[in-house]
Length: 534
Image (cartoon, rainbow, N blue to C red; front, side):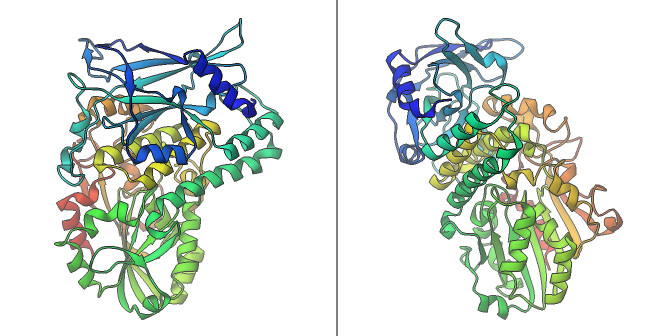
C-alpha cells in the first residue's frame, strides 16, 4: 500500500472519469439521472478540517425513485456505485458520505463492503474495482429539533416524488493516520485477506496506540461544552451544567444525585429532556438541596472501569458523609456498575462515608450490547449517527467525532477501549460479573422493547438484520431488553434489590414510540423518576 502516492492515485481516478453509478436494487427504478450539487453549510468546513477530500470535487443528487411491487417493496431502494482504483491505491482510504437534502449535515456513510464480491482485481491493469451499495432516502427534518419527537422517524420514510439523497465519494487524506497504518501494514506479517489482516504480535502495541489516539480525538470533540475535558459537574437551576469545585463538593451534606451519560454522548446530550424541563428539574433540584452532580466523561478511549476509577479517585475525593442516588443511561450503566460493585471502590466509598442508596438504570447496558462486538462496530456508530440525526440534528462537534470514527473504521477497523468494555462477551463485563456484591441498596430499571418494524424504510433495511445482532431478542435498538433489567447474570445473591421500575413494552409486546435515545423525553419516565428518587 503506497500511501505516498495518494495524490497521484486520486488524480488518476479523476482523469479517468472516476466512477460509475448504476441502480442495482431489485425493488426500484430511478427517474432521472444523478446531477452535480453544491456543498453547503458547516459540514463542508468539518470535512475539510478532518482531511476528507471530495473526489472529482463533485456531489450527486439522486432524483425521484419509483418503487416496484414485490416481496421487498418496503425495503429502501439502493444505488450501486463502482469505483476503479489504480494499482497503488488503498481501498480503505475511500468512503461514500451521504448528506441531507439541504447538503448541510452528514446523515450516513458507506464503506466498501467486506464481502469478496465487493472487490475485483482487473487482470490487464492490476487495478481494483470497489463497490458501494447505498440505500436511498428523502431526509428532511422539522424546523425545530424539539417538536414532534415521538414521530421523528416518520420524517425519513418517504422517497417518492421528492429529491433523494445527496452523496459523494471522499478520500481520507489524514497524513498521520495514513503514514502510521502504511508503516504497520508494510512491516507486519499478514495472514488472510487484505480486508481482514492479522497483525504480528510485535506490532499490536503500535496498533493499539493508533486506535486510542483516534478514540481520544473523538472523545475530545464530544466534550465541546467542557473544553475537551472530562468534568465532574454541578447542575444549577438553569439546567446548564458547569464544573463542580472542591469547595462545593466539601459543602455537600445529606443527600445528592449523580447523573452518568452513555456512549458517544455528554451530560447535556443525554439528559436534555430532564434538565430542560422546567416542570421537572427545578423541583428535583430542590429535593436534593441543589446537590445534583453529573459525570461528563470519555466513552471511547477509556473503559468503563477506568471511567469509574477516575470518577471515584480523582473527582469525588472531596465528597464525604453523603447519601448518593444515581441515574445512568446506556453505557453509563457499565460505568456505575464498576463504580458500586468493584470491591476496591466499595471500600473507598465506605471510608469516605458515601452511602449509595438507589441506582436507576435507564436503558442501561448492564450486560453490554451485541452492537459492541467487533464485527458490529460500524453498525453501532452508523445506528447512533442516524438516530441522533433523525431525532433532532447533530452538532458540529458530533459530526467531527463521527468523521474521526469513520477514519478508524476505514483504515484499521479495530475496537476502541470504551466500546470493547460494552462487549457482552468481552473481558471487562466478564470480570465485572465476578464481583457479586454492590454498595447500592437498590437497583431500579427502566427499559424498552422497540418494534423495529415501525421504522421507515431507510432505517428498516438496517434493522431487519437485528436477528443477526440480538438473535431476535427484544431490544431498544441499541441495548437488549434482558441485559437492561434484573438478570441472574450478575449479583446472583442480591436479586432482592433489583426492581423493574417501568418497561415500555415487554419481551413479547414491542411498542413504536420509545427507543434508546428518547427515554428522557417521555412523561412516564419523569413520573417514574419522581416516584423513585427520594
